[in-house]
Length: 301
Image 1 (cartoon, rainbow, N blue to C red):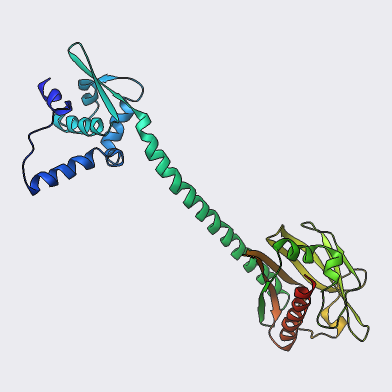
Image 2 (image 1 turned 135 degrees about the vertical axis):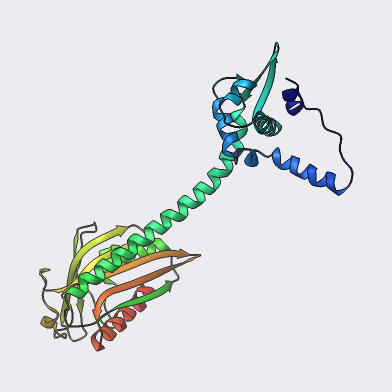
């Protein structure tokens, strides 16, 4: 009984003087810290044993293959940081857990759990997009067994809100105002704007020749992402080879177009990735055509 009384009492020992006392005082402060207390697996098990009921000190000690002195020290640390209270009933002293003291630990962990959940979700999204892009690139490359391919990436910054830039891609009437290179018009635009839905776009050259393209919307995340396949077509939306419009035979029947949107202050950043184009002059012309279209898009906003 005398050992428990000494180790679990609130009587402060005689304090030695000088630096040695300061060092010992700092160690004692660390012991009273809840985080330090529960870092030890034995102390966590003690809390588990007395979390639902009060046990006398001998009963607590009987659960462990440790010396009684070691158990006394663990109980003293838990008591100092407020995780355990000790009550005297007759000649027995009973220990009971005060689990509400763990709230500060739970709150601290919650902050970091939210932080890492957000980071891990962002990583998962990035890996899925990376895999999707890789899959689509492979799909486009399979259309060109003997040719190398490349992706065209264009990033533009528009002095317009995100909603307006998004509408320019998703509203047929607005779309017709800018679609096609410089001096081209767009007389026809049909959109079934849903994942799996089809579209039919047209461009008319200054000489009056019409060019049609069609495809399927693969991914739609409003105000964030548009992704669709891209193929040449006739006026009814039936796919035709690029050669039907005098293009090189190396041009694939299907490519992937991906547009990402992001707000930057009062402006909107738009990044286009055209995946699976053949290396050569035709792709250079495609990139030039996109840039001329985006100049018109900027003017339409």
